Image (cartoon, rainbow, N blue to C red; front, side, top):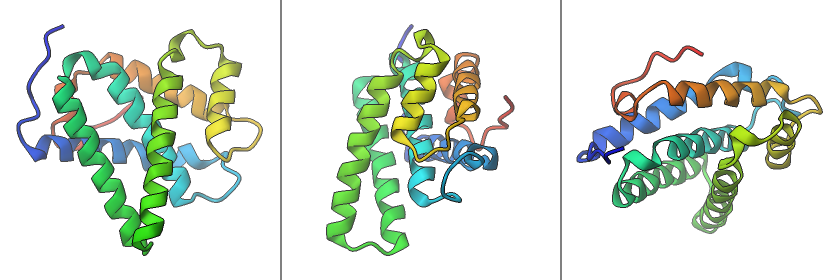
Length: 165
């Protein structure tokens, strides 16, 4: 595939970010969490969405654009953490933890399609505070990967997607 240069404006980054946020706000994703639904849980689910997004569209994005998108999204997460009221030292530590977690998610989902359901469940359980039965998230991310496969990168750069899967 030819790499498209669609990242010439921050609007595209913002639309991608907003579409990933919209996916993350799906209330059904939080039904099996041990806690009610914390900022941290939401952020981890966001990181899963972003990791799958990068996995599926990495061949369509130049390394430079992928880095710029990553930097933009990390800045947005940092702003969100600051808005919650954390101080500089806490923000820096949390951001380091979340970036490391993101790389772990990215590395682990690389082989998502060939994993057995039990291994997918374990992967999600290892990274999130989930009750025993987490088929819900595994099934959801299987559907999400299918959604990504059937949609183009350009769709994510538009205003908020109508997401049905």
